[in-house]
Image 1 (tube, one colour):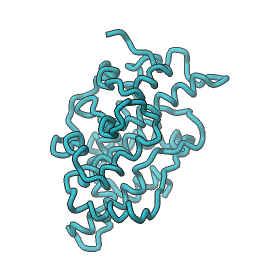
Image 2 (cartoon, one colour):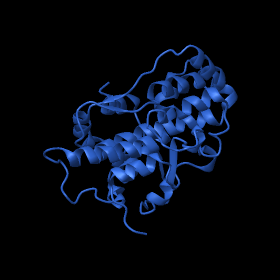
Image 3 (spheres, rainbow, N blue to C red):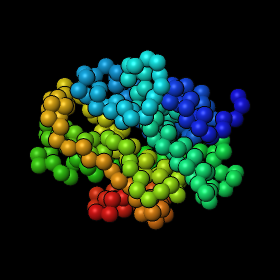
Length: 267
């Protein structure tokens, strides 16, 4: 298969519903399974009731997807490119649009030979996968378990997961330009690891979460959006890389909520 160039035509092909598996066939990362079949979204996301399904598909509403078939089910948020790469369509489009903006600036920030073809994205996706693994495996220990008033209370657990997904399930807004694609990939991987794990609980426990989504649909409470300062992320890139490497090597045994939140969100 011919090498696929990164350009506006590629972005249009993705928005037109072209098979991403075919477009990204050159992306071959590790085959370690991060998400087991019992937590994969693709087998259940089409069949949950509309209050949950509508919220799950909501990030795709503003993408300008051009599929002639109007059913949202044709564009599930996550695509599965390999055992360890689960990424939202809007995240892929955002990375490609970052590259095009950087390339088209009066003083391009990319070297002429950087990110010309799809396979040039592998370093970005490798950083994404490493941080996705950390987010997926640590979600409960960071965002749910420490905050429970009653341990193992299913209703309270559902409320914590729902509160998290309401604040995180939206496009990241980049405030200060497009100047560090690798750092953006790492941040996306971590947040999408958290999101994917949260949605796994929701999609496989529909009856438990449905009342919460129905209530939110009838009386929306808030719609928080992350605003990511790229300059801050660039500074954190090295600290986060060391942090993730330490986890992978076993040098860090326990994730501390306060340390991770300080690293990521300046809390």
